[in-house]
Image (cartoon, rainbow, N blue to C red; front, side):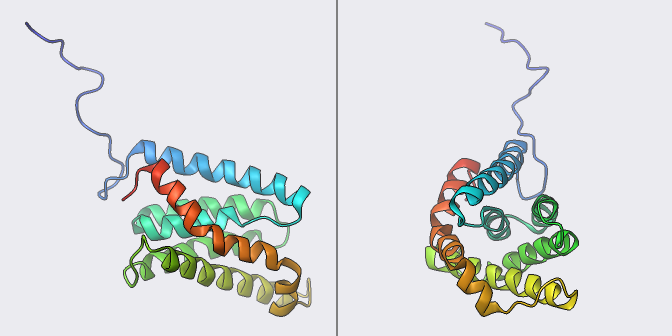
Length: 179
């Protein structure tokens, strides 16, 4: 019995990069980024504190993906995050790819599936983002803040971001089918 030839979709996978990141993985990552931004904005408005999901996505991509994917994804995440802030738009566009590249460079020092290592990378990323934002706002005279005042005002969000990072990374790994 003869089978029909597969003209439209042969038995090959559609790869976007040399690392094997499929189109499905990329679409799901960007969809999760969009959903996380919407959820973060809505729930932070009502709760007052919520984990920084966009930063968690940046750290996740930095740990589990290659350099090319990290730069593109983190640039888009920086644009999304910066578009919701009137004073740190340009900083977020530069800062998020830098944080993603730092996480990508440090991923070889740790076992990337270790929850403690994931929480450590998230803590380092949070420290960098908060430090750069405070420095920028103090230089431009928009605010006179210190790290201690930021910690006091948003300690719940910082702790939730760090504690939930392994759980969110596990969820994202399962949904994007990343090793």
